[in-house]
Amino acid sequence: MYAVIDLSQNHIVVQLLSIEVSSYGNYYCVECPDSCKRGMYYYDGNFFDYPPPTSTENKLKAVSLLKETDWVTFPDVVNTSLTPHLLNQDEFIEYRRQLRAISVDPIDGYINWPVIPNEKWEK
Image (tube, rainbow, N blue to C red; front, top):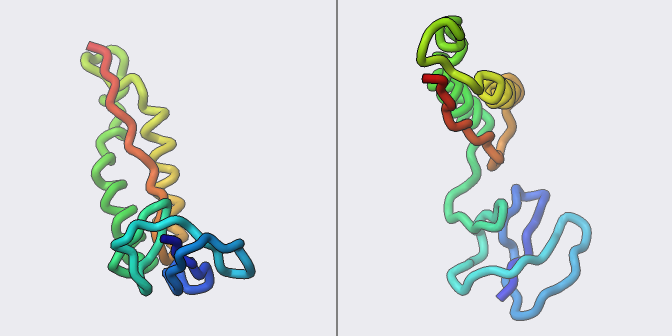
């Protein structure tokens, strides 16, 4: 089964077809599971029953994720004269930069959230 997705309506499934059709205008076609139905939302290869998050919801999530990694900005965390100390602060700084960009200019819809780095410690 194939779903016709409308880009202008936040990637909503507007039609289900038994054959694949070519993309045109704001519409494109993707293969979908039998459980797919009109009105579902499509994002990053997945179908959802619920609407995409609002910009406010995305901002709140970004701010929350930033707060969870505030600790990496403390000077003693990367002080090489103290053990243990964090070795990959630069990865966390980039992760936090991406989150700040979302929190400063949030958008409606699904977001490819940055992945938090694994902590690497010098012991």
